[in-house]
Every structure is written in structure tokens, then in C-alpha cells.
Length: 585
Image (cartoon, rainbow, N blue to C red):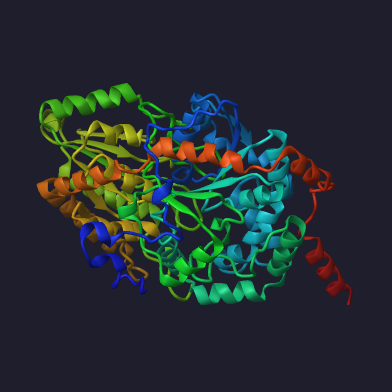
């Protein structure tokens, strides 16, 4: 099947058939009514392993909260920036920086910084950053496995939930320890990985064939694969995530008990025949549980900076807006007939990711950056919303729509933009609470969580995608008839300001158009009705409890423990020896 932008597979067929993925096994028998959450007589201990990506960790919070409410213990291995929402669930926070010294000791104490240090140690600092990351990612995972094993053993873990997009070290450790693992996929099913990876690699100026060749021929990567397989009993192939494109070995039954997908069956992206056959052979199981929505007033991971806790203009760590006051303003606007429009460009573009953040551009086919930065993109979107719907004098502010704008963690994010009098602009907005209140339009980057949360509450969309799955979700909004899209401009060098001005006009026009189109609301409501049939938070919690039965016995775990002699190894030792020998020669 072709996944080119001009021939997306969901452009044909009926609404319900467009997005039906065919998972590697029929999961119909796995669906259980949402009121049948299992209550285990024995309290269990669960570990949640997630990194810094807010969009990946947010859907895990209501599942953790549900398990805690049922009397179980939950421990998170994550980053300091996520401590507040983690502890809000009743779970215990553990710092991965502190517990994974094999990776972080004597390297910069953040994911990108440590990875960059690793690249420098291996002489890759001048390569394309994405190419270097694909060469060293397995080495980084290998460095994290010993610490994850120590962590899981220290809490006497029964089951692990992990971020399917970032934390490969978790299922590796679970396989070794005999602990069941459950992945959380915050894309539109396993089929979404193909298109998402195509988009992401293209934005970095790379092709899958170049990355495949790099992995096949980079000896430190191959050495790492060999050590992982021999040390932990894994069966990892030399090429990761590229044969076929988007297929991840960690989803197979050898590593993961169940893969939970945060969409419903009808909105999943289809898999290619090759990928479907590969997952069938691996025994992978996927279950679409729908968006995992937290309770009203729950803390949520927001925009952040990778190298430090997110700060606002006063240099303080931002807190979620006073939810009661904000929701009261929304309710009052609705009461008097004012439309409510919410604008958010997500956490990645407003953050400082080196690949897709505030200062980043996309890359052309030659690896050269071009187009708008994340800052220019966000400010153009905000400016378009202000132009279309803003009221710039206090006297008329209550006559126009109420604009609620999430700005993210950067200092002075608006730059030279002036917010209109009818806009509430804050670093952090409680997104699910705002959508739950019932708004008229969501201007969004189109990330998977934002897309599904909007559909859950029948909210029409204007999607302004940045990269990856956001591009697919933008087209999906148009195909479903729930809104419009404004594609990211990609101007030649020197034409950025002109492109940004044109983009701002297009965003303004789209916001006016969708806000006045009642058919978008009706079609979004149809999606909301379909989403309700998914199991949601209670089904996800039930899967975690069911997985407890798959844990190895205490006798088996004791035998494994006897083999844990010295897990604080140095996976770079062989490379260092090889380099020393070469230098000596």
C-alpha cells in the first residue's frame, strides 16, 4: 500500500471503513464492558516507564490513578519535569536521571544531551543528528537496561506499562526478569508508525533506505545488538523499526503482553500487508481502548524545556491555570451565547526538541534546514486566530468569541504579537477540562492526543500540523468532515517572512470558516459516539491486572536474580578497546 501524501489509504471508502486497521490478531474477544474492572484481592505493584514527552505520558495518568484507587501501588520511572502530575495520581515518582547512571553519569542529564554526548564519544557529532541517533539509539537503550532492571527488582514489580515510542529499554528488562509488559501507543494504531516515520525522517532530510544501510553497517550498533541478545536472552535483529518501515519488534509477544492503542477501532490507520504479516508472525496483540481521559481537575504534563523545568515570564515553574476560574469564564461565555475557541500547538513544537521544537526547522532532501521554525509556526497560528476572532478594545471584548490560548514554556512566546482583549493566554491550559466544558472550535497542531480528545467531546478542528502523525491527522480531519487543515509552509531560503504572513492569513480564514460550519460539529459528534464504544481507562486498567497472571513465579525470579552479578557494565567497552587498538597500530 502506498502512504504518499497524495495517495493516503483512508481517502476512499465509507467513514467507518476508512480507518479500520486489521490488527495482527482479532481483539474482539478481548473487549470487556467498561464497568467490569477486575479488583484483585492481592495488592499489586505496577511500574510505569516514561520519558519526557508529555503527549506520551499524559494518557497513562488516568490508568495509574485507577490502579491506585483500586488499592494497588504504582511507581513511575520518569523525569523531574513530570513529578507533579505523577504524584497527583497517587503514584510514587522515581528519577530516571538518578537511577540510570550507566547512561547519565558523566553525561548531560537529559535525554537529548546524553544522546549527543554518546554521539560525540563515538565520533558522530558532525553527522545528521537523526542519522546519528538511529546509529546510537540501541546503544543508549543498552546503557539504560541495567538501571531499569535494578528499579523493577527494588519495587518487586508485577507488571510494567511503558512508552511504546521512546522506552525500548523497558520491555528488554521485562523480558529478562519475566515481568509482563504493556505498551502504550499514542498514535493511531501500529499502522500509523509507517507514515509517521516517513514524515519525521523526511523532515530530517533522510530516507528509510539511508537509515537502514547505516544500521546494517555501523559496527558499534551491531555490537550492541549482539550484547543485548547474549546478555538478556533477546532476539533483536540488526535493523530496528525499518523492516518493514514502522514495525517494532518490542510489540511482539516475546516482549509485550498487550499493546494498548489510544484510539478507537474505526479511527485507526491501516497497516500495510507486509507489516500485518510481520506482526501476525510475532504474535503481537493490539487493543484500541480509545483516548484515556482523566478526571476533572487532574494535573497534566504540559510544555517543558528538555534541559530545565519549564519557566514562565517571571522565571517560575508554571502551574495549570486556576481551573475553576477558567472554566467559570468559559461557562459564562457559553451562557450569554459567545463562541469559545481554544488554541494550542502542543508540547513538542513549543518546547526545545532539537528535531521539532521552538528553534527547529524541517530539513530538505539534502539535510539542509529550511522553512519556518517552531516559533514562527506557533506565532503565525496565534496571530491568525487573533486576526480572525480577536477584539482589541475592552468595550467590545465581551461581544466577540472567548479565545483560550495555550502558549507553552518559552519566555515571551508571543514576541511582537499583541493578544486581543477577548483572549486568555497562559503557559499551561488544562486541555481535557476545557474540551469537556464544550467549546466551539479547537485550533490545534493535530497531535494524536489532541485529535482524539477533541473527537471525544465532538469539537470541530482547524489542524495546523508540524510534523509526523500530525500531518496524517490533519488530512483525517478533512476526510471525516470534522474540520479543516492548514499545511505547514516550506518556503525557500529568504522567503520565510512572506510565507509566515500568508500562513497566518490562511489560519485566520480557516478558523472563520470552520466556526461557521455546523456540519463539522455534527460529524464530530458521530466520532464521539463511536469513541464511547471503546473500553477507555477502565479497560486499560483491567489489561494491567490481567497481565499479572503472566508474571514468572518467585522460584523462577530467584533463579534470574542469581544471574545478576554485575549489571553496571560498560556497553561501550568493546568499541573503546577497538579504538585503542587502532590508535596503537
